Image (cartoon, rainbow over all chains, first blue to last red; front, side, top):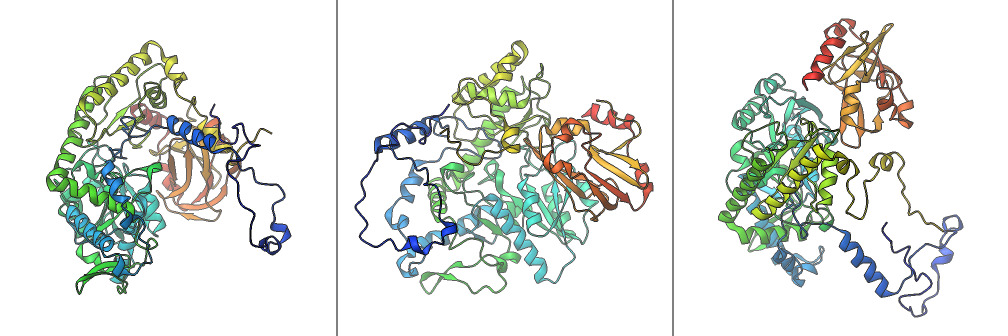
Length: 481
Length: 127
């Protein structure tokens, strides 16, 4: 059990002495009596060394990409270069105020301006916005752009967004929140979009399609040009989810494949920290026809200086206060300048090589339902491992071997899915160690399945009751006294 | 668990049972096994019109979120509100107390196109 700061001894001691207030306590009388709290807050009162030990202890219980491989499929958990962090901490960036006069922050504006152009270049599209705060926010921005495009044309009939059944769960959510109705298209036996199934639903009620390329099975849509062509002929637009850009960055461009809207995940493909390590960023690039609708303000270069321009009357409005998560864009910008075009090609080459190497090792011991060359990730099945062992058991047992497990139970079209994405920043030795652990677990499943059913045993917490956590959530800290 | 022979089934793993001029709709035992422990059921409002193939309800498990599709077009006449407090009933008794909604079909002939128990069992054996 973890000792939290609330349980630490020393509640009676204080860690700092405050001078007496030199202003009257006027606020106490201003608060209506019924809003005043009856019980003092339980703020831990421990000396500074105990605070430091508390956080140091928690940090040792953590596992992140700086500890080891993090093969979470579809998340692209690549190493986050520390140079990015150094640059983001430069005071001239770090202390710039979002309301500063633009003449005082020309460097920051130039960075935003250039970053948009680099992203549009990578996407093969006309322009980009850095406003969206993360991937799903980028999707929502893209859906708003598509809706506004049809409104602007006076085409009010298009209410459907098409989605393959392998789509990320955020896709239908984004389309629905933007006011569309979602229609699912079944994948063919090869795991790709079935053109006949697509054609059967394409008509003048379809606003567009949302595709992830390569798809969530890690398979490139070989008929991508036909898919986007058919959608365009029906008058619809093509949205590409950039979750899997790591598979082809620097080698192919969504715009050339027929994408009209494309979102990046800077926290996946472009190496900025993911999840607890910092906010995300989900810039959106668009084709020429959608440029007038991009969020405002836009950064423009005019009369020799960089400025914010709000004068885009057909814009969808603002998607984020100020200009998105600036620090994240800065780190991704640093990463891109370090790599250049050749570096980006090496990223996708090694991401695909690593995934195929690991797939080749692991398909000897686990079923691979869609068995073909993959791109940056692949999906195994834990079904048929035997002795009642489930994918959840396999994932939990990996924790005992010191590895972060892959994504599990997604995509939904593979039973007992294990979705593995090693990324380009792992070496062969690490991939071999991970594969050896997976092979050992497959042996244990046959010889001693209880080991798996009881896993994990070597980490700070045992298997959590996920069901009870959702059905009867404990939302406040359970003080024992 | 046996699949009742007086029920009809869909390829998306719903079952229906004709009761008078209405049908009762739920998800199959196979579906609840695939989903795992169900923790939430989002139910439609009574009186909602649904088209065949559209989402009528959503069930959420610890693993995933799945839509429940209307096997026929019609109007929602009753919803199983007991699921709001006890969604786990779908796991415990998928073909009985775990029913989700009742629909009055616009065209009862649509029911004829659904699978019978034998065809459904063949379908899940192949999955």
